[in-house]
Length: 455
Image (cartoon, rainbow, N blue to C red; front, side, top):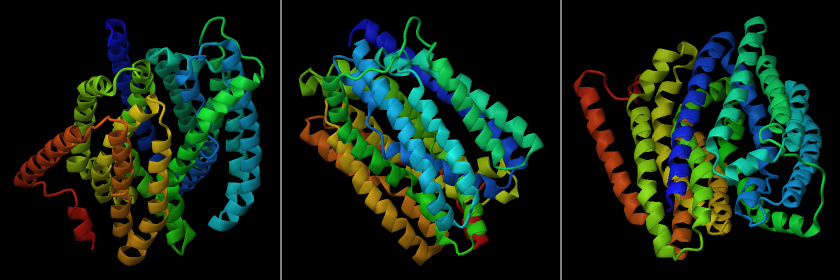
């Protein structure tokens, strides 16, 4: 790796950690205020709406950012404008689809507020479609700082709007308003991110074909990703006969999941904004040389996020009980289980970006398809047999299949990370055991004590 790329990677990692840490801190503070202003049912319903929006987006994702980053034409104005045109058309189609499906979804979940909320939140598809491709270019250039600061500004704007609105109106519209207004202004601001950078409607047939061909595997993988990542939120409220109780449990579950996903989201940011663009620049190297370069940096990422996993597994219950009121305390035993289950996904994420960078997106599609099948079957069966505990455990162990599929791809592409994975996992397990032993010896018990006392 050249010194300039090393500098970019180091700077990118620092900014990614800062951006994510600051963003999560803001999210946590806003959550603490919002959970006191709003009921769990409101969080449950908004989570459901968010899941539908994310699902529609993922089911139509054609990998525009990876296409721009990966393609040799990624700096060509015609290529960028063709990508922008495709993005804008997609945004309008997705909004129309959101309006259409709002009626059957309201019927399925016995909540007619969905008919009013989903079309309004769905307008963010149009905003996103008309947003500039400047963020794609910044990712291609590994300009993490600018991208991070841009995202942070509008995250803060969204939070401020939600808090002010919720103070006066304790309804779901405070969350909807924050999302809608910040998305609108983010679209406008994106066109001023890079000086003298403009988008206009352009259609280059050959370039469009290249974008859509590369995106076909991304489309399959992201569609499967939606099912695999969001299925738990769609299924959980339907497992309860009382729709209000289902939304309440979902609201509590989301609080635990928000913390449990922290390590996974950190790795996602680093992988997408740093690992993928940089590995792409070395994709022509002999595989053994490429493998060594990846392994030398990958262990540092796993070490950093592994420490966060240890904290969440060993002290997550205390975090919930101290930060949230009694309405959310059921999340205290859910968080440690989900946090431990995140580890296979961290191994997966730091491996799959390597496959994408060498032009092998099919393994991403295969792994997410396997996970989506699992998520739509096993957690529901586990709930039927063992209740909410069974559901949580089934969700926590879902990433083993995902990880196994990517291991197969890495072995086939001569990018074997198994030895490093085994070493890091062993260190994680030993450290968790030591920390839990110390915690119990100090009289604080174990993270799952509340689960057994409540039963």
